[in-house]
View 1 (cartoon, rainbow, N blue to C red):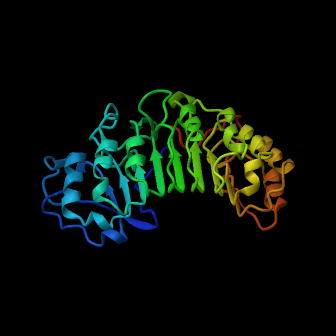
View 2 (tube, rainbow, N blue to C red):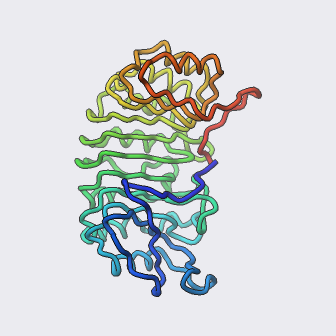
View 3 (cartoon, rainbow, N blue to C red):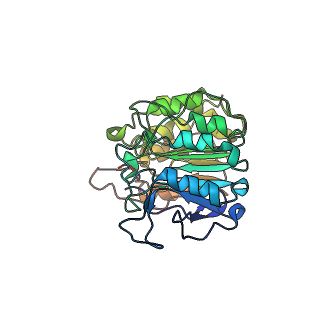
Amino acid sequence: MSFVEYLDEFGGLPVVAFAAHPDAPAPQDEGKSAWRIDCHYDDEYGDWSSDWFSFEETWERFLARADTSQVTALTIGMWDDYIEGASFYPVAEILAASAGRLPALRALFLGDIFEGGDGGSDTAYIEHRDLTPILRAYPALEELWVRGRPSEDGAAHFEPLRHSALRRLVFESGGLPAAAMRTVAECDFPALQHLEFYFGEPHYGGDATVADVQWLLGGGHFPNLTHLGLRDSLVQDEIAAEAAHAPIVSRLKTLDLSLGTLGDEGAAALLAGQPLTHLEKLDLHHHFISEPMQERLGTAWPGVDVDLSDALSDSRGSRYIAVAE
């Protein structure tokens, strides 16, 4: 599967699509909404067949018509009318060049795109070029969500760097390269509290294994991390087995191993590992765990919210991850 709808909330605010048509009303309450900016056909104010606005045109109108000094959250959708082959469109450079107009920006989502949307694309085909300019241009940014993968095979989303304000970093991908995970290990994010990796399918570039997050499980990075998501993996049992004894888990509030192929083997490893009673939540939803093992997990750690929803059948011996193509 892929994602199936636009974000309706981001950065604690409702998401509103910016209307690029010249006849559309000017944006209101910029500080109370997260704005989605993308290229699209706008048939509300004109002829559907002719009113197509490029990302750059829409962005310039947004800067001109909105009080961007009040904008705290943005989501970026389609940057071309056909995503495949358009990964080199300079979205990162455009956003970085506009940093002076967005002094209050604290949350940014890149790739608010889904199959069936305006233009639309499956997650596996959303590509980003180097995002380093964004992180350098917005030193006060607290949340960065990236849906998609690097435009170059085996590359990372950004180069190693220091960012003192970043608290939440999420990579949603149908196939996240190992290099993208390993590059995060070389970064200095002293404020980071929330980190998620979607492993994805090898067919779509998701070549990471448990070895590529050993640096993270060892607990030597990100001293303020309280939420860790190692999700959407074909080796979810192996990840669970490593997490069961990982030093970093002892200081987490939430451990998220959802959306992957977790089965009884991984569940048994969690039960045999370190005590998890300190967790507020253990998220295992979308799994292939048998009912008897689910019952054991549900009572193993009193007071811990263990999410075992979306239980799937493994009767044919064929497991699958939630987000791939």
